[in-house]
Length: 154
Image (cartoon, rainbow, N blue to C red; front, side):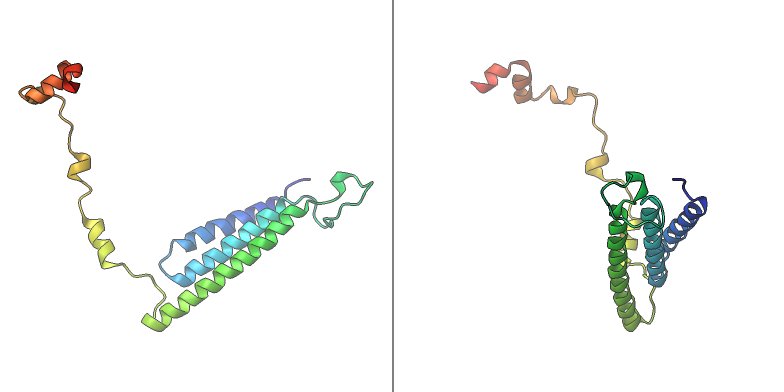
């Protein structure tokens, strides 16, 4: 079985355009990206099925190379159903967004912008650990536990 190069190129284009559309701010473009990715996955699964044009039926006495694997076809049907469900859900979200704000773009949240402008320095996590522990030598309890651990227990 040889792989069809045209099919591979089409799958690559579908994946590339789908991922590009997923990164947009418009929910309609995100929906189109999901649909294109779903179609790319369907082509990928069908290209793994084996020889094209043969039924996935096993009959005794037939060479195993003469029939196709039914699992990729079942996975393709499952991928179609999942893509349809996600498409229906996204259409509902897009409709609701259009009714509420007359736009289908995702706006920046004020809280997200405030968190994004904060300094990444956190005093508790990023403070330097002192290398010199001589400042603790004056403490008698620390000396007792570090020099003679047995006396501290008694």
